[in-house]
Image (cartoon, rainbow, N blue to C red; front, side, top):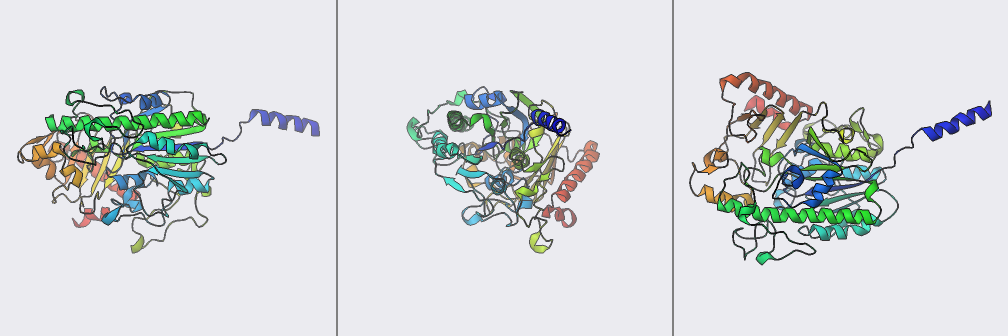
Amino acid sequence: MKRIFQFYLWIAVLVLPAAAAPMNIVLFVADDLSPTLGCYGDKAARTPNADRLAAEGTLFRNAFCTTASCSASRSVILTGLHNHANGQYGHQHSYHKFGSYPSVQSLPVMLQRLGYRTARIGKHHTAPEEVYFFETKLPGNGRSPVEMAEQSESFIKAGGKPFFLFFATTDPHRGGGLAADLPDKPDLFGNKPSRGSHTNIKEVFYGPKDVPVPAFLPDTAAARAELAQYYQSVARVDQGLGRLIEILKAAGRLDDTLIAFTSDHGMAFPGAKTTVYEPGLRVPFIVRDPRLARRGIASDAMISLVDLTPTLLDAGGGWDVGTQSVKPAALPLTAGSPKKGKGNVGAWPTAKLHGRSLLPILGEKSATGWDAIYASHTFHEIQMYYPMRVVRDRKFKLIWNIAHPLPFPFASDLWEAPTWQAQFKQGPKAPYGQKTVEAYIHRPAFELFDIAADPNEAHNLAADPKHAETLQLYKAKLKDFQVASQDPWILKWDYE
């Protein structure tokens, strides 16, 4: 009998799968990058490495950020909580001074508890340090993603524990110079003057006629000149991704590393960044899981950056798909809900996040139950108070401009953008994409779009009596989201 038992035990060991080893994780986050990549159908983009990553993984066609502001969005990426719940309402640096609640549990800290080595390189832009703690801070030039990749090589090659690398470029963020249409001067997307190159980069140059003009921008000389500079900066991001993949492969780590590639939000033009219109919220999102046999899949699931932390925790063994919550091993020993009170408005129980893991739907073209996303924006810079809340599904999109009596505020770099200034100087009736200058600055309380029929958000249906019932239905959905995510701004429904 004993021998029979040992025989069946031996058979069971052979048949049952071994527990999956934790995956190494690379989270590649570009700065202000729209889905302007070849794999998303952009014929102007020269992005062979992103295209190859998509061919080897899953590309999400309907991926959205929750707020088109750098710090606030990064806080969502690294916590799985909307920024109104984690407390990072706007920019972290300098006098802006926003930061998350001390009770918030971030992705790098939870992965460290699960046995991971953690490192970041490039743009971090969240606070406080003890909440968003990484064991290793690697130096690197954010305008040379290739150099960043090479600076990450020693961390990747180090043995022992699995690793988590947060790789965040500065490209293609605005910054660094004067008018973009002056080829001998520094431009507004970090490119060198006089066709110069950043370290280890083979710059890709564009002319104004080489680039498409998206519907939210005016087709003007200023817009084309800026877009040419933007696309050059995008090409640097792609080269950094390619070099990073080369290093992973050379180190023998490519086949046990999950790579997630995305951006904090859309491109840095008025009408995109800092808004909750489609060009601000839509982001590229590609995941390469080497364990999957199905490759080159384009998913139609509607996903959000709030899903990133659950997904990467799942890859590291710290997510319970059944309960959609963080496993206890990833939480502190004293984990639990913060005490409710005036000082904790917006704080969130540490185990329950707002997103879901994408691992179960990787490699699938369609996924049931992934048909709506939500957005929550409050600040960009400290002087830019303009809270907006959004519910968007496959048919309609509702925007609530909570502070609608105020003029829409501009980030300093977006206000100075030649594309905007050229139209603004023509007066309030001048066209700006699908709107006028005046309509862009002064917005109604509600904007309701039939997003399926009107993807460029040209026709606001909120005041149309034919859509009164739809407006009420989507207001109710928005309120439900605010209740579920403990949004302090839900109070505005009652007294404003």
